[in-house]
Image 1: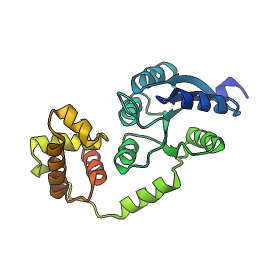
Image 2 (image 1 turned 60 degrees about the vertical axis):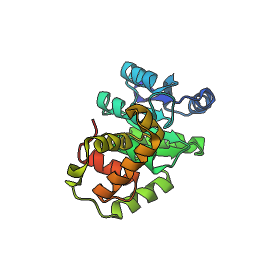
Image 3 (image 1 turned 135 degrees about the vertical axis):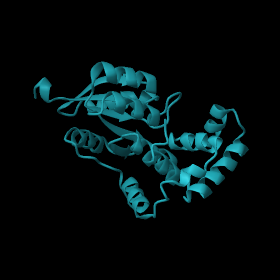
Image 4 (image 1 turned 30 degrees about the horizontal axis):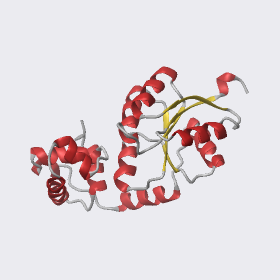
Length: 216
């Protein structure tokens, strides 16, 4: 297979052993080329800009910039690149924001090597692959009624800030730290936000924020 046909893959994961294992396994797969490894989001963005990979295997939870923010930045820089989330998490408040950020496929780290390789090849062809549990959650979400598009007009300035943090996949503690307020205060604002938007949980609030362009 010629170099032009190789699928260039970038690994972004803060666990060294995961990167070593993925690199070793994928190196044996025909047609795939590991062009770089990054241990954090900032390095992932830098390497993506430098090497223009076809596919990026993206960890979701990392120190510093998480996979959600990293994916969002990379999609702005390289909209043609396909980001495959490879994570241990199926939390709604992480899964939906990263898909909204532009993730193309979503796999769990329990996936077999052959499944990951298949997902990479599929992504390069423009075919998205979602973990079955992810696909089920998304279908259930789509079936739920949507809140009114103007519901956010009732939010206070602080509630809007908290909503933006929710949309970025930040936890209550992370939101408290970033906004210099207490966790109890964050929880109070979240309760008010859900009530005012007419949504059931943080995930619906995040989706609302992205769909209505409320995230900076």
